[in-house]
Length: 226
Image (cartoon, rainbow, N blue to C red):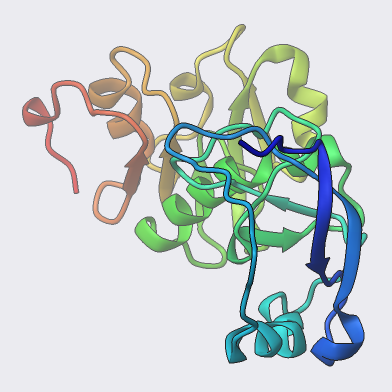
């Protein structure tokens, strides 16, 4: 029986280029804990295959547009876990450069909520420039008039983000504040009771208004609207 040392030698490369030039022997590779189903094997001989030196030579192209030390943000995948940690391995295609004017705290909120909002407004809502939209998301780079709701304590913040009209839902009801049949698109993240048959029909333009919701529409059969 062979005792497995805490560290051992291994051939590695940390930069891309000619395999014979970038590959070096690391004398202090740390032995990782075995996972269920794994077997620790003592290596006697190993072969270097064409794919090995090709990866070393061309691997840099795997991350186009990124370099070490770039500030990025990402959603780690629908089945991935562990983002509340100091380090996380993320598929490169899920990464995006963090906007320079955005803090890390702000950027962390973008991948999921931002993508959902973009899909709701553009992909499904077909929002066009100069239309009026309401009920949640502030400008997405589109020349649209924005009416949105927020907690009363955040009204100033939401206005600073570019909203044209802000309704503090803890003190007033958006269906009573917005002009009747004035909104082209409502983007709803959490439909409150009664809003479908009351506020939505009251505020949306009757012939062309669109509701995009992340939840189920209550009693939609009683008052269908496309």
